[in-house]
Length: 216
Image 1 (cartoon, rainbow, N blue to C red):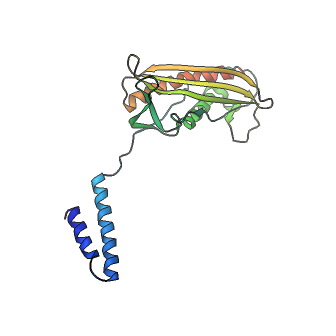
Image 2: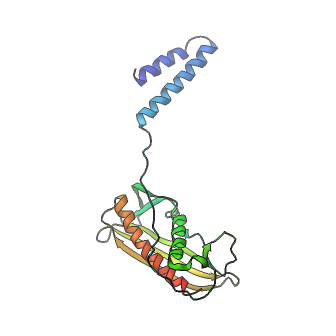
Image 3: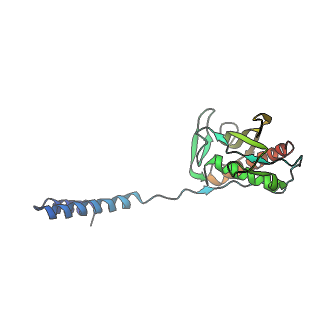
């Protein structure tokens, strides 16, 4: 039986005299039309989800015995999402249709940055802000760019982050640096775009960890 026939028959039952018949007919109409809506829409398809890696095979210098906590990065709303940014023209922002990050980008970046410190043999001197640690320094970061640019000679992954190390007791900025990395992407498909962004972010993580480790 078609959806239209089911709806018409249910509507006919709903129009019969009597309070009980009307109530039953209304319920049948709602259920039948709801079922048709599900069939017509086909249901939601899962969006392919991608993760960032943390670089491993590298060492970071050990300057002292201070404890550094890594705060959550700040970012504009366009980057504060699970969606993956694509810039087809300067100043124009779109997103990949069939790809997303495994978490909001700032949270994902913070997790992989802490993991990078740990992989660089700084596990005992780095923690997460908010974990109740008695820190000597706080690392603050701002995500300036994290996406695929397609307007300059083919798709390229661009990662740029501004970082500050702040003394916990003084509140003063001890050091500041901007880190930028690029990596060519084979295409703007989900696997190719995220692979290029992972390569660029790995470069930033290594440079950032080595830079910060020499200052606490």
